[in-house]
Length: 491
Ligand SMILES: Cc1cc2nc3c(=O)[nH]c(=O)nc-3n(C[C@H](O)[C@H](O)[C@H](O)COP(=O)(O)OP(=O)(O)OC[C@H]3O[C@@H](n4cnc5c(N)ncnc54)[C@H](O)[C@@H]3O)c2cc1C
Ligand SMILES: *[C@@H]1O[C@H](CO)[C@@H](O)[C@H](O)[C@H]1NC(C)=O
Ligand SMILES: *[C@@H]1O[C@H](CO)[C@@H](O)[C@H](O)[C@H]1NC(C)=O
Ligand SMILES: *[C@@H]1O[C@H](CO)[C@@H](O)[C@H](O)[C@H]1NC(C)=O
Image 1: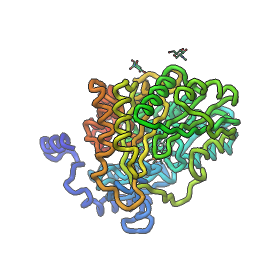
Image 2: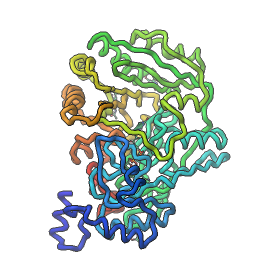
Image 3: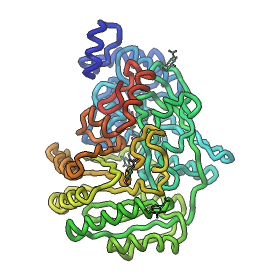
Image 4: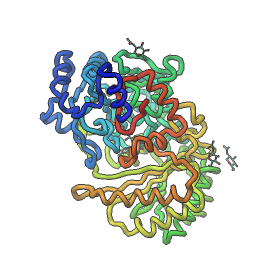
């Protein structure tokens, strides 16, 4: 906001000031505007409002200036107009699962446009396409796709996550190595822009906007619909889980080295998996193929990691999803699941031996006997067979195509508040890795938003070499910064 304040000051009062000293002062005028335009709202202090502003991450709470719950595209347009004409920043919210509560603005004083009513799923079974509302939650969407001709898309594992945020910033899950990220399967998006017009974005219409939406969408508009490419849901899938027991730092380092080498050189595109390092460590995933082929593919890795046994079963598509959902696919209304946590990410192309040693030593010294419910997840994201990595790094604004692992560091508490002093645990772990490879600009994933990053660091790590082009497109589509947040693309 620093640059904008300067601009506003230097131009007198030609631009509405979005950097108002206390944006909550604008509550009354925005509410009046929404009410005049007949946009449905949750009134501040009502039960619906109090429920809606409870974020997934209890650690990170914010107070909106106003809370719109539109039912039509016209009402989305009117809500955007009410925000921009009154100098109040507008934020779309879909599933509310941002780790930094970016769906609530990531700071106080935003006008929230809650997309919960835009949740329909309509499949064109012959064309293998589906129109999917951003407000749908993954479990409901997967079920609806399956119920219309047994179709599917590639998406994340947690059934409560919203399609909106997941798709606009990535979307990695149990089909991604064969089917790409969720955003790779978007054919078209309908978007309400900052000037409240509605446009279609695709490879042939507003293609620069379409590029920006696929990796950095929150800063560019409010998406009201996605058209996706679908495929026939695979059945008879091998779901597996092995117990992993690293006995020392060097034993963990050996396992990680083997896993990284396997992911880069040998992991086929029909094998999706992740190492979940925690007090109970596991290697789990899905193989789309026969049991005998699975055994053949896994044998060299299991031998190098010293793993055997495992729980291995054959599953239908919906059971495959349920295995990783840790609960039913259909989501309760209102949604009311929360955790209290701090999280960080790294998207390394490659972890050098020194980085693996540092990571493993830190685990042994600081994590292994830490009794909080922390975990470090290594998704086997890239490598030479992954559909994610086959797309060029500048083909969409998602900057992490060549990342071998998608690493998520997560530390939570089940007893009250998260003490801010605990953040040093994960900050130190990430630093141990980045310090070991000082010349590398590590990628980080905004869908695992890290609230400890400054705006500049967020831009540098979330979007890497794609940032400059994003910033240029932002200047065209949202010159007045109607859609802003502490870590979103600026201009
Ligand atoms: C339990 C859990 C499991 C997860 N599992 C996975 C996983 O397997 N794979 C993976 O890739 N990620 C995963 N994530 C991360 C998830 O992808 C992100 O948190 C995602 O941003 C959530 O989207 P949302 O719509 O629920 O969140 P929100 O908080 O509503 O939105 C997130 C961001 O997107 C913007 N946004 C939302 N809707 C729109 C819209 N319609 N138009 C424009 N901008 C919009 C918001 O303004 C905000 O900046 C998981 C998260 C959680 C909490
Ligand atoms: C991946 O690399 C390995 C060796 O580095 C090679 O044998 C294999 O054929 C490659 N696979 C693909 C799909 O390029
Ligand atoms: C991709 O990552 C590999 C390591 O897995 C590295 O050797 C290669 O240089 C990277 N490619 C690009 C284009 O960054
Ligand atoms: C709205 O913004 C878009 C993108 O910058 C622009 O193409 C369009 O002309 C604008 N519409 C109006 C009515 O100003």
